[in-house]
Image (cartoon, rainbow, N blue to C red; front, side, top):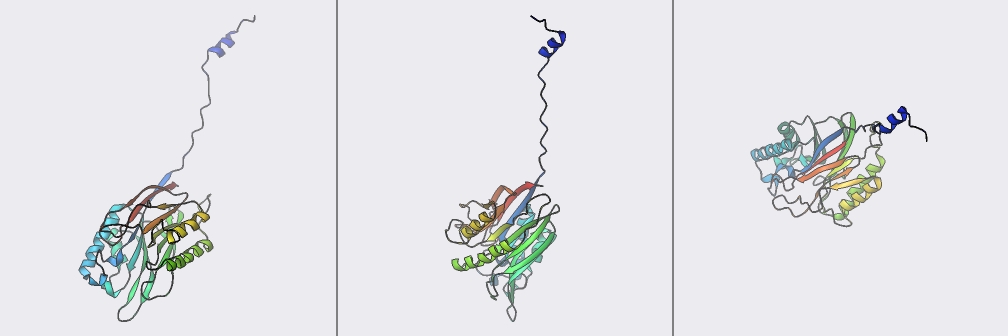
Length: 289
């Protein structure tokens, strides 16, 4: 039998050496907070904005501004925002909200415009704490009362363009909502999405007032979600049981945010407020930066 050498004994008694795994470098997780809110022309819970005094409109806008500022939102998508309408004393709602909130960037896409003795000019708007590289408004038609549309914008987040669509659909007719939605889907198919460096192109976040339930088969929310799933991986927020309308006693969910990968929802809240007939939806997202 061969005697074990001293070198053999050292090897036998030495601790087992393992190569430590190379630490994985995780990407920095950035966060973004988005709010979508139909502000009902600044009228609060009144049935008609024309019933409000100018002082009352300014007061309600100040309270909306306070809510948005306290929400910590980076981007706010607003619907029913007036630029110059007789029924709310021709107050520019977006400029007032920009002053109240301190958002440095504000854009309004007018969908309804009427001149004459009783002018109207209102649509969808975006407030952003980040620069907006590009924006384009898309009215669905040319009606001088009640026309809806969608606003497309590319927001600069840390040097990358985040595409977002702020949408408002018709409340009266399912068929009309579907027709309007087809314009949005056509836009998505024809419009190239901005690239992230070293990544696939980003699909847009889509949000707004769709004026129908998320569970209603054959209506706009279902149709849009089906189209988006064919386009990429999406989630819809808030939860189907969440209610956003009417604000004083919510019974229906009409306001939604459609979120594509690589964005991931951290939390989603329907904010309790009585500043419009809708309640705002807040969504906090995270993504690899």
